[in-house]
Length: 182
Image (tube, rainbow, N blue to C red; front, side, top):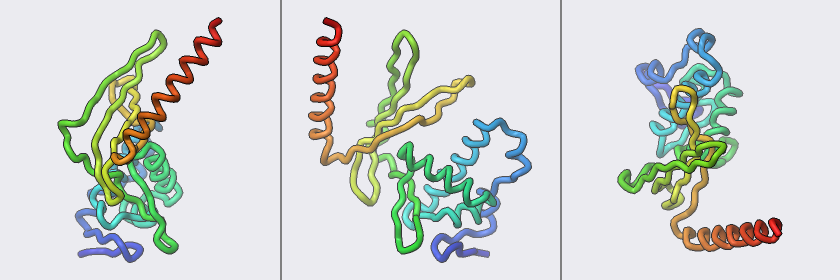
């Protein structure tokens, strides 16, 4: 049996069970694990609804989560560039930020200073708005699991211009640093 939620995304009973989150199970998880579980389920739903997109109310109806909770997690996913949203009429529709075009072009690396280590990933993505370089900053938890701290998307058509601005900014910072140290 299929259900149409908010007139857009259709789910069947099996799918509803796959994405449903039991509030009793959430209750016993530490806050960080609770966030990871909710976000991973929402991301799976976003990927499932890749072409149609999905609304807060649809995610809430499928997962059983409160709409405020869903909205907060979707906005976080938008902030770290795992998702994007567009407005269609009175609806805000969320989409995954794109699919990786060439997995062999992915690059993971770390940058270390005396104080900390930062982890980064470059990916080549495509979505309905074009092709992008996706730069993610990741962090490791105490169990050595990665989570995304932030990210930026740079349209492939603008990469050269972006690099020019970046190099100019780095040059100005170095000049300022040299002047400040005198």
